[in-house]
Amino acid sequence: MTLSIGTRAPDFTLPATDGREISLDGLKGRKVVLYFYPKDDTSGCTLEAQNFQALKAEFTSADTEIVGVSPDGLKSHDKFRAKYGLDFTLASDEATAMLQTYGVWIEKSMYGRKYMGVERTTVLIDRNGLIAQLWSKVKVPGHAEEVLKAAQALG
Image (cartoon, rainbow, N blue to C red; front, top):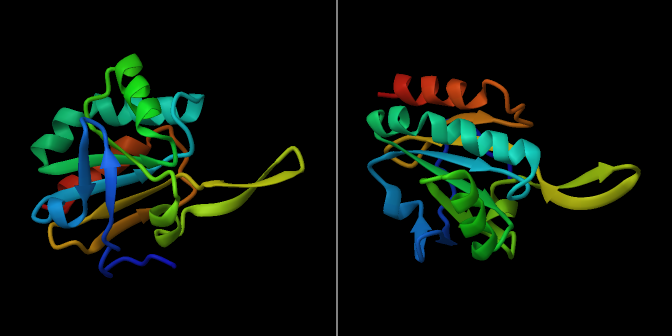
């Protein structure tokens, strides 16, 4: 599925940190930063999470919920959050169904070996559940700041 700005974000329900489930429907009325990342506790994913964490107060002021999604399990997410002091939600999609629905579960290649993995992507969803902004093939430096500006501009 190809996502596009102005269309309804696909609904999802996933197990999340703090022993709860998270769903897009349950976040209705708030803005949501849904960021997809490949793996807990790797250099790029750690930096991205730390950058979002550093701006968490500003995202909260903009009435915007941050949700990180990867195929890692909840135990991995819990360790990752504890190690880096992350206090936003991480959701687990071990079956990759939601990752596939959002079009971020793709064939990748490293050192000539092909495998399936997450393409670093961020989706900003407005209060009505519509896609307000999309960032594909995200480069981590400066990304969280760019997403925050877009969330603040969304009003």
